[in-house]
Image (cartoon, rainbow, N blue to C red; front, side, top):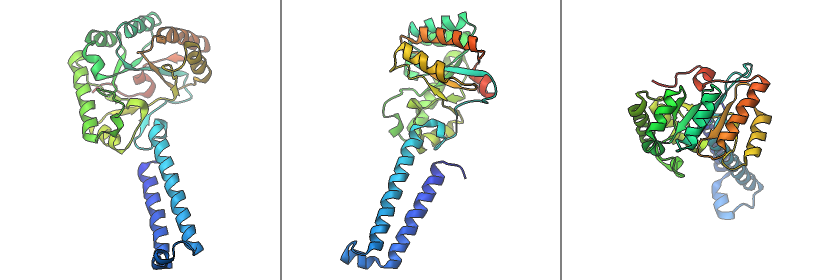
Length: 272
């Protein structure tokens, strides 16, 4: 049985029901009148509290770690036996930064994937066209990427995904099939929205933390941890990303790892 939201919830409800039945059989009337003086009630209460804590902790990590595929199956890495990886950039397009990054990628003949935010696309349509013209993949990263995105209903999430897809298609005449959840956080509402959109959820296997670490710290991390089949998460709204990307590309060449497109790495179609 897979470790996922539905199975864990069913098990939690089964445990709670079992403990409640035991409590009823032992006489809840006694419990209501005399409290927890009987040891059996203290044991049942402790088990209920422990079960609830374990369940809520599981929900937290299952939602926060996209790699667990807890709420929805995401594509987070490829075959570890092939010496290929993919690099992805979130949160753009960003004037100058994305354009300078494209120059670096073109210089090294490297193809990347850009998960773009709809509201950033609106005023940077020429950059979107350039990304596509140079053979890179454009993915959907929601329209607003709001901090409260994960608190929305599945209907509102789906509306953002659809709006961003339509915007991208209006610019490059191609509709993405790949979506990266904002912050990499998943929940049942998002799972429903992604299923209805019929898109692939894309995660990552190596998070660079480039938006909070220095250039040297970021490079040290991704150089030391990169493995075959990795999908690396970077951001093209970060002023250090140009130097980070160029130095990392040179590093992968030296160790014999090839950077390929996400389509090639995962063997999927990036557009409908």
